Amino acid sequence: MSIYPDLFLTFFRVGSLTFGGGYAMLPLIQKEVVEKKRWATTEDIVDYYAVGQCLPGMIAVNTAVLIGYQVGKKRGAAAAAAGLVSPSLIVILAIAALIQNFADLPAVQSAFAGIRVAVCALIVNAVWKIARQGIKDLPALLLGLGALGAAFWLKVSPVPLVILAGLFGLALRGRRGAPESPESPEPSEPPEPPEPPAHRLKGQGAGPK
Image (cartoon, rainbow, N blue to C red; front, side):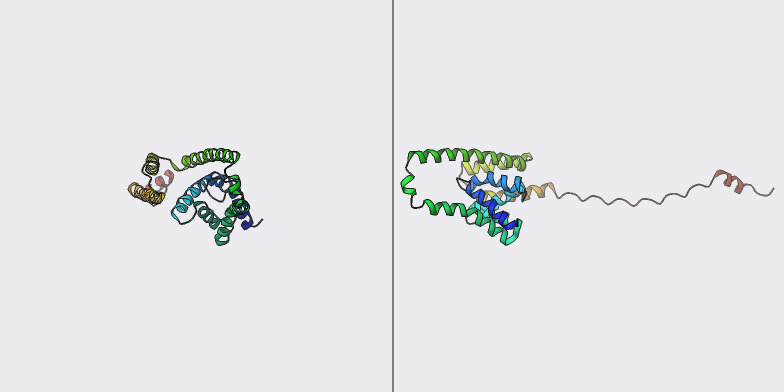
């Protein structure tokens, strides 16, 4: 199969099985893109989400475009974005005229309440997997807790948090210093010439009497 239909179908599955927005897609993207297709690593997905959150538009579509571009350049980006938005477009067109008649039904509200709980559990599971990959030392842990506190209590926008976290990483790398390049081996001294055998020395030392 060509990579472009594969990208379209992969993100079509992600879009079809997701309820709750961009963050709810994170577990499915992790499973489909990282574990099954191996198109990206967990670190790549975290970076794409961070960049997608700072760009205009929906974070899920931005992330799909970044992944598709990495796999198949411009056509890959278009295939991934089309696959992601197609299920929502189809469903919205199908129920747009009926939503007013069914949205207030107790059964529908209960079903969506259960779906939201399951989505929250999937997001927590995906965040835990990513945190184990990204938080590897004490500065990273403190940075994560600080960003969580700023977002939760101070209601700071994700954009400055991502920018400040990037600057923090650069400053930390500069403080630690660039990795030292391996030292070039010192030139070895030429081996000493072997000593002549003892019988030659005796022969050379014996002169005419």
